[in-house]
Amino acid sequence: MTQTAQESLTDTDTCPKCKGTGWVFYTGDDGMEYGKQCDCWEKMVASRRLKFAELPEAFKDVKLENFNLSIYREIASRNLIAVAAKTVKYYLDNFDDMKSQGMGLYLYSETKGSGKTRMAVGIANALLKGHQVKFAGSTTIIKEIKRTWNKKPSEDGETESQLLDSLAAVEILIIDDFGTETPAGWINDKFYQIINDRYVGRKVTIFTSNAALDRLNYDERITNRIKERTYQIAFPEESVRDYIAEKNNQELINNLKR
Image 1 (spheres, rainbow, N blue to C red):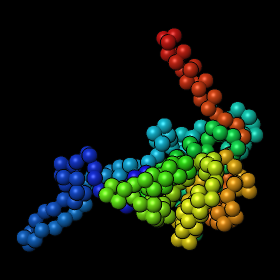
Image 2: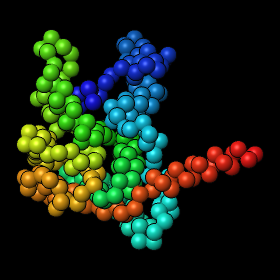
Image 3: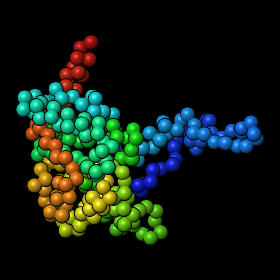
Image 4: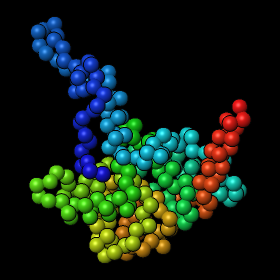
């Protein structure tokens, strides 16, 4: 998470038409030079957004349309995830209104591996088509803050102030595993600064957490702001990781039998 909130303008796949600038220049009939967006523009912007988002490598291909609801074995879990998926779809279908109100999501379940991160990445991939998204684990944010403390003035990279400002300014911020960190006083203060700045600026923030809001180990300044600016969506208390592992092993066995 070393980039600022401004997307990088570099692209390793250079278009031969525009030389990576995104613009093609030509001379009109009047002898004047004009410019127009290159055919590669949308692809280039999409590539930059994906790079900027820093989605987890393991989930980068996850889309909402391939989020498998049937992988949950318990009936109660299937019913709950169906409601969660329906709520997320409604949220995305009405995202312009949600964005204008600064409304985000809070996906929670005490059980690890219940699909919260997978759903959050699916949401990110859906929003990346037209928006700037940043995905970061809460512990990663803490590590990045600590890293700025040891940075020498002559070294490249963000200062703590620049890092916090960039997290506050990005259009859509997804904080994964919020609440798993030990909320020392300074951590509480830094997250309050990020969340409060986004609250004031009506910026969309999406959280995944292993704790319901009323069980987070953060003070009410933080939880109240999250409560006001998110829709809370419960996820099943069932892990699907074992089932995914079983499926992978079965596929391997079937391939060996051929």
